[in-house]
Image (cartoon, rainbow, N blue to C red; front, top):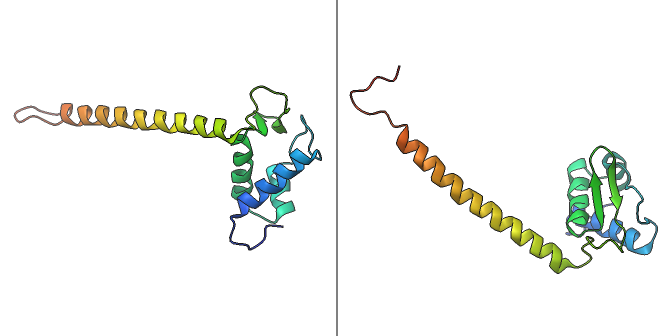
Length: 125
């Protein structure tokens, strides 16, 4: 079902699933079909389907439950981010945190590199 339109397949799948959620054919609390079933339905790879579901998670339309599956979120759920701004803010926070951790890790690696440099006259057993 993914068409060769120039638009990435995962976005086409996300668009279709989003329309089904907003149209009511995938009601709140309903589990999405398995990744394998969606891949078969859309004639796409598992990774493309996973990306599509990831888009819906970022938008707050679905939520994953470990070991159970991915479910359509209730629109009345206060945590549901029907607002792309909220998803964007969350993403910006995550990027800032990752950047901060990267800087801190680089400093630790630099300290380790300078502290483990063998010194002349010492044996390294």
